[in-house]
Image (cartoon, rainbow, N blue to C red):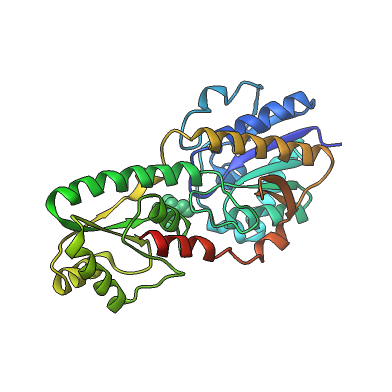
Length: 318
Ligand code: F6P
């Protein structure tokens, strides 16, 4: 029977991580567990930055973006000798179960720790929505709202000057933020991994729009094309007065939306229920609005949903 459970956040911070931590800590206390937080992800684990917390530890942070238990990217965690340090630190505290909130890379660490005797449950935490085992990742809804708010504002200035503005959106090769924001803002063109740049089509679209619109909004998913080169190309091949913008890290911060908090708390509490039943080596997801879990190794091999239906919606509305 698991008595002590740790929780850490790993990879890029995402709004709602605090809500997941809060949910897990409360559920753990209600189920009679001692709850521990690890400060700074896997890095904190190997540096013994592990602290026992009371039930109300994260209550004040429900409405805060970022992660109050900090995070760090630690590529070295792939190495077995580094992971052994982590297991040693957890065992020294008598902790035999760990909740890991993060992306795919963090899941790999959780899977490896499980095979080394620490029952782990992964929660999908990243603004990118790039975890195939869940329809929704913690942080995506808030980041999407931030992107939409920014694009709406950029549209206002673009409209006033009759400009084309190309905005780079985060996503780490996952198109979801760009695609969803493209639909929600009625953008004029999107460029993503599933819809790579077609120069001829872009110029044709923008030239047509020049005749009927006061502005044109192009959303470029990061890492898909060089923003400056694209801006120059549009400038040279259309009549549009063309500018660009990179939304950057504002996409990662901000007050988590209500839906984000509810889903994150739901996932955090479910993770504790799983560990209480002795289930580990799994990751939690929300699929068709039902909370669910599956083996991490299986989750990591799932194909990303290409949202062909949403691509079609974008084609209609653009
Ligand atoms: O995974 C979240 C994310 O913000 C990606 O969208 C982006 O590519 C990456 O993290 C940026 O990472 P870093 O925090 O290392 O700059």
